[in-house]
Length: 336
Image 1: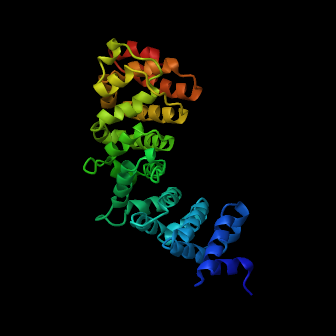
Image 2 (image 1 turned 45 degrees about the vertical axis):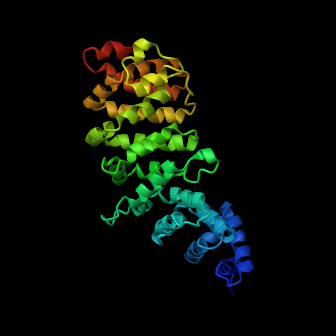
């Protein structure tokens, strides 16, 4: 005899719309608790395909189905099963259907599915050279085109997907490919007023900087956007004197000559400093930092900083600059 849970999961495929709607609402509710998740996990092989099918239905059914899948995908075993049954491709296909009403939920689902190497590989399409990176290009385009100014920023969670895939070497390679031009597009989103976007962009830049040893040239190709994204969050609160800004490119000097919004999130400041550290590990990276008067910016920022962990990140860079040569030493001393 079927258990109540088996019957409930079976009702997700009912030909009766009211029965199906009631079942998906109950399942969605159960996915919101740990006990409910564990009960449903036993029937994953039937449950997941049933919920996936419901994603193509009307909003009153597709929305609770999508919410349920987002909740279920927080469990690594369930997320792994979803990747295995092709959930990444399904989500991407549905995401770009003209009449989709669950965009934000599908993006959140992809955030959870790209927590694993298998999920990342599926999104990068690493098995097929002809289309490799196509999903990423689509997501970056949507991330950059959509805006949180309208109040419904359905693609803001793409920033978290980019952080996930940039933890993977193949992901970083796609993002840093100058022919695709993705990094430049992503960095420009750092100006967004959305904290989620800012954090996504700074985390992605920081991860990409792990390739600085081999791909420094590709990073510096977008230096006009890279340095402001990295240095402005850690520049402190002061308005800089002309004697400092005259040694900077306009994109830095102009911004530091006026009042500006501080970056209050210490995690973003740490990520920016870690990215700078990875760049200045390379001699050409140190030269690039000096060319924009970066050490002076770090010195002023360090003087304003109060968070011990952020100060530690400044000091790591300072120690590298101090052990540089010639004129670097006296300016960098204060940074340390």
